[in-house]
Length: 382
Image (spheres, rainbow, N blue to C red):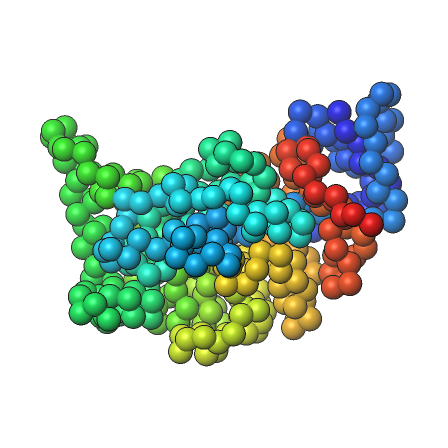
């Protein structure tokens, strides 16, 4: 067992415990609160003067599939041989020894969703992993955790330059619909008892139609977001909006759709026309409309080490600290559908937490210790 004592605990739910104690057993939180008798002969971490938060969660990354500073050899995130590659899986391209995982732990990031890139209309399956380990399969929290899709400039640019469909937004939407219909036909045959030859594309896309996983769609522009929602309603499928850069223009419309969105990478430059209206105001507008949102770095577009910094900048521009913390902890876990395991310091959940050497919303402070599954995975050297 392990006890963290004398801590200011930001639970992740909005609650704050002063002079609190956390007991950890078998990698899970066993007790969180005040005034508890500490069992004898257990390891004690004195967190006097420190703040403890849940481990941070980045819902949208290319960690380990888009390795930093390597180039072509480390670029395993876009299978650009076809505009629709729903048969591929991000888990098969992850290098768990990539430096980004170490940077994540140093910054207090304990869980990430890793996904294919946005070159393709359908990019393949994604996976949620903890940020420590040498064998990806042993790091998995949930696999698969979604199917990647993309609207807008990226598929147009990649395949338009090859002179093949899609070269327009109409073409992107048509490709997406066509493949959903083909997967629907494949699924109907199986459900009707017909003998069919296995097809990995339709097999994996069928998980979306069966509501086993959401379609997680890269969409910056407001009109692209609306197209995604139109297709969601046509096929009655679960979705999340990834990036949601112009979400502030249609925040009240999004709020009516019962969907989660991720916003970011807002610290990056406005590198494309569809990100020209990028800014922290998007988060504030979504919050005012009641849209559930997460904050993402889109690593390596913005380094994973800047997830907390992104939350700090969101607060600087008008978001409350409570919502900013939830956007990288409990709401991020809800976005991923794993809030029963991670996202807050509550009894029964995985013991993923960070001990900060001061207020985590003060940019001068940093993660002093990071713990995953009750095991110390990073300690800052003084």
